[in-house]
Amino acid sequence: MCSPMRKPAGGLCHHSGAYEFARLVEAETDGRIVIRVVSDGELGDEEEIWKQLKLGGIDFARMSLSPLVDDLPKLNVLFLPYLYRDDTHMWAVLDGEMGEEFLAEFEGSGGKALSWYDGGARNFYTVHGPVRSPEDLEGLRIRIQSSEMMEDLVEALGAVPVSMAFSEVYAGLQTGVIDGAENNWSSFESSGHYRVAGYYTVDEHSRVPEVQLVSESAWEKLSAKDREILLRCAKESAAYEREMWKRQQEEAERAVWESGCTVIELSAEEKEAFYRCVEPVYDKYCAEYMDIVEKIRKIGEHEREE
Image (cartoon, rainbow, N blue to C red; front, side, top):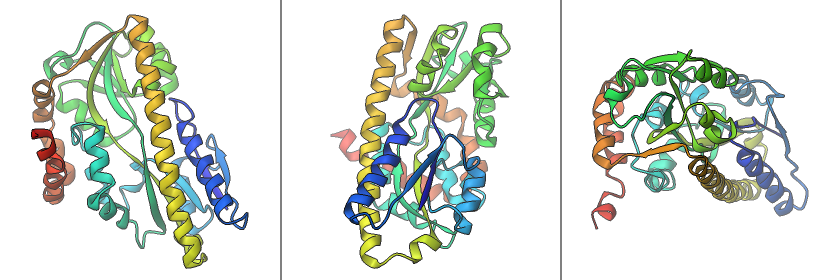
């Protein structure tokens, strides 16, 4: 069985999760099921991997949600900006009943969802000054990944979205082609972007999980016992990946602070100003799912109040 994993810009956490999954499965099936991990785009980009997985050409995959929303539009909810208060809130959602409902959305799609991996929180960083409010982004040219929702998000905040390959961002920041970008702590640090964009605003506008999948054709060939084993190993490997990701983020954050980069940590009230600006994004992408959005927002609120 084959499992493709692309190499993330921030490090090897996702690879580690994949190898841990493969190790656990082989050990618990006494070598009857062996998963070969393939990385660095060897089997194509994520859209191609999703197509192959649905057809049974690939058995397992760890994917971002972007290539999946055309087939599974409800997943757009998990892309919404400023949806979660923090990572504790997100995992309370995804590890609970709501998360199981989203995993169940995959039934009949050609892929079965096994577990959630951490993809980190994305933050804005800029060259010429700090960002503490949407007004500070007004007119700035901000590099984004190719994503319609991200484009709408940046425009709603008053900035100008610029779609650009990640490999071109450093030079773009250095030469003034762009005024800023957005990414997680690990990518900001490992890319060296902090050297040319010295202001990092922890607004956590995007906190999108990734999903571990098995093709339905491979799943149907497994016995009930082996299915139980795979589900258990998938959740154990997800817990392992999340811990690895957390450590990596902490190390990157520490390195950024030590570099002398200015880190702007927003209060809840300051974050609320950003959220109010992007409400049209909610209306455009998830108008029919606002009941789900409200349920997500309420999860864990009583614990926060206590």
